[in-house]
Length: 122
Image 1 (cartoon, rainbow, N blue to C red):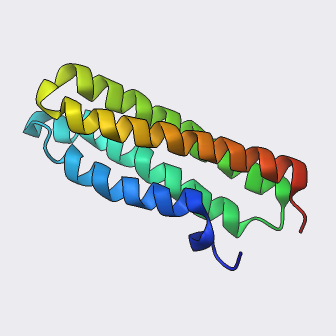
Image 2 (spheres, rainbow, N blue to C red; image 1 turned 120 degrees about the vertical axis):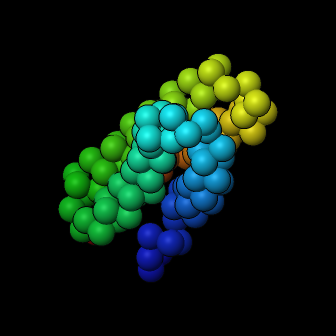
């Protein structure tokens, strides 16, 4: 692994980040800077924490800490998507697909986190 870009959790997270960005802009104007902004920030945090953790990979505990942050941001993203599904039915189908993908990403982040905890060597 030469770069954080080699991590599946990063590439999947970035793909979802771009899909989520487009969908969040379909929210009503008054929601763009409320729930839309929270969704954009939390999904950005998922990938940003992966990158920052990778940058600190020489320090196993730091790497673990940032993967935990990434996983927590992923859970926050899922919560925002749930709210949007319930509040804006016209976005429900697309958001449900996004929810499933973020849910799968969360499982991958958690699995990678466990791998780092148990097997990571500098």
